[in-house]
Length: 328
Image (tube, rainbow, N blue to C red; front, top):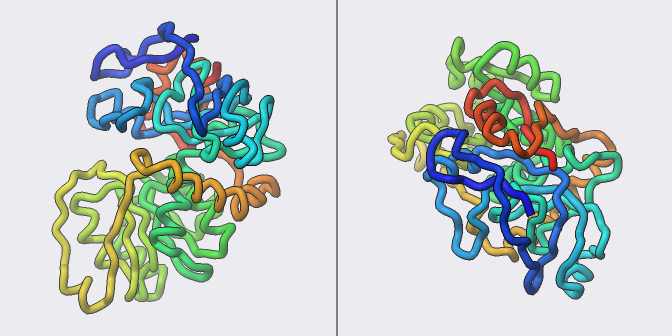
């Protein structure tokens, strides 16, 4: 099969089209003929050598695919409500930048009615991540306020739509007025240009001084101290990336007095059973919202798979709003 491999850690040009042996589905797995592969920030980190591949996972980059099941464990497929020939999208621990990809059957979801393969390939990584962190870990409730750092990212556009569809109020930050406008069009109640405004002051102003209930943080570093300041009592910060660095100093007295929670998680190394539970929740609670149009994929640009280097360069430019997808 053809695949995109990382020839050496470094620049986007290290991504090269190559030929690899076809993968074989094992127990509990299916083999997918890939039509489209989503690009995510962890792929960039892996290419740079900053995101180790979990034990047993493919060395090829790519954490989400959409395509057709062409082989697999019959019992596992039946348990997941799948069969040969089904069109699915899947969350994988690696190997997504390829014509064929192995995925746990329990991490496959049917392509939502009305979506094409490119749109379906843009769903798994951000949907699994947002559900697991915002709703499972941070327990966002209807009527609460969510602050999303980086509202125009792939994670951001998913978090905006999912939180709004499930009854929350959403405030986002973004790095330009155009990105802020795009976030509001997607449903955000308010968008803060963090380059021209202090998001702490704005979040407090927009909540009449109460603060936000949940912060979805992709920055960490010195952002954590500022996020603590703009949390409501019993508020929760959930960290899903550390683009601003790993070291954070914050007012622990606030955490004690106001019963704040600072948590976080990374999804890739978690076991299949954990991800399977997320898949079941998405299918039950979120897939109907996608099929009704209440939540829509946001595709910024597609590239032929052979142009993966260009796609990574675009992601690193931070010009995009939504997802970038490779097609096969």
